Length: 115
Image (spheres, rainbow, N blue to C red):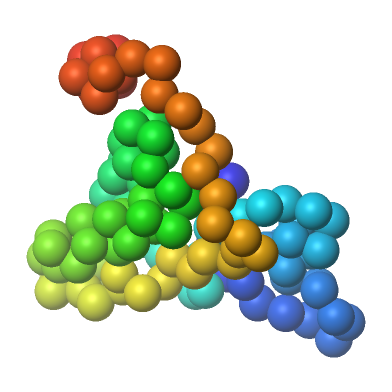
């Protein structure tokens, strides 16, 4: 799921999308603390899924996704091309270390499939 402001709480406990999913038993949830521009989401999600497909833990994949966004700060915004610092928008909620996939193929096989 990729949704802006999915960490923001309301009046009740566990009212954000992220905290509600964790309270219902999700082992890990990646959510966005604020609105995120499409290009940042594209960079983050692309790297996140590549890392997960390679068998990395969710926390390692989130870290790699943040670094991908951090290393490409010059992106479009409503005010034109700007150096954005939105790498911290993705937030990980996790109760335990979690690796969602065990790769059946090599990373090269997976990357060629995604192209």
